[in-house]
Image (cartoon, rainbow, N blue to C red; front, side):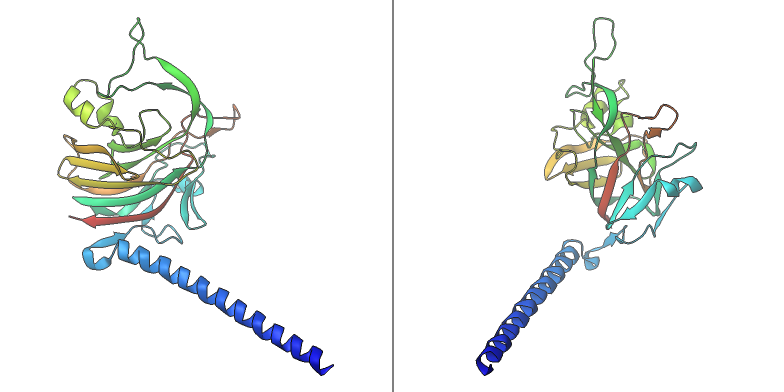
Length: 265
């Protein structure tokens, strides 16, 4: 009996040591991740976090009902545009910025509905048919964006179009100025597949904009004439679910954001 008791005690000691090692390793990993995040965006170098990962402190709405669309889930800002209502349903940062560098991570959760998607050429123009109409391809869609300095015209698109995310729709869609239009058209589609996280690294100085998406340069010193001198960061609501027709708009903001940091220049 003494021999059996000794074996049980030894096994208990070994099990406790294993559990202690697992707990220690988990703590190291957690602290390591936290340390890494802090090192990537140190306050000592001027970085400021716009999202605390817990709630929407530092963000606001133009209409009360928008609070039902935006929420924090599992440490990310989540948009589920299921409620139909009038007015501005975007979410606005309380902090206003002039010249800055922005780091923001985002993903399209899924696609819903069908959108007749035009084909955008490298110069920012559209492929047209013999009647001068845009040639479109029906495809599943999702659509959101980030307004720079609070300007809807200066919106970095987040979407499923073949041209890729990072274009500045309000400037690119103005077909009058070919130089400006080409400058705000992505040089490459750098998007990860729907459901995967993407990273924007954005620098806006004066009216000049440079955008990296997932480490690839998609816009290089593009010009945004007339952009406001300062303003907030705005995460865009777009499309949504039509409860009457019981169908999704093919360009709905089924999007999430995390790790939003800015550095004023």
